Image (tube, rainbow, N blue to C red; front, side, top):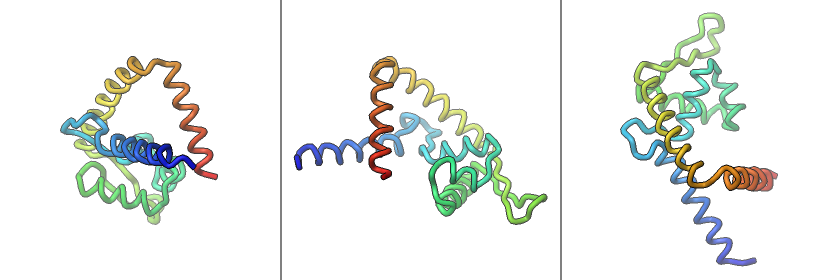
Length: 139
């Protein structure tokens, strides 16, 4: 096994994860982690915790932890569903809507710049390789 290649792989994955999770939105005031953003987008789409967990490949506990954190930040509310008391209704607050919109706007601008710099063909190749890598790792 090529140890230098292994080390470069691990460092690159670590750096990629750090960039995605901590710099999403390019250090703007209204920065959400990728997980926060995806959970909040699912909430806007009217999805419940179980559906969110299934769609994002998270455990129900991770979604619960995420929604608790978002609620503490006053970005969402969690209310008992009047039709089924075992379920929670998740809703974005005014601040949550503001931060989601700001993060989406920042992402759209950053993504457009990324595509311009990367090029469509390279991006498509990258996505193909990332899907292959994810598939191999998931086995």
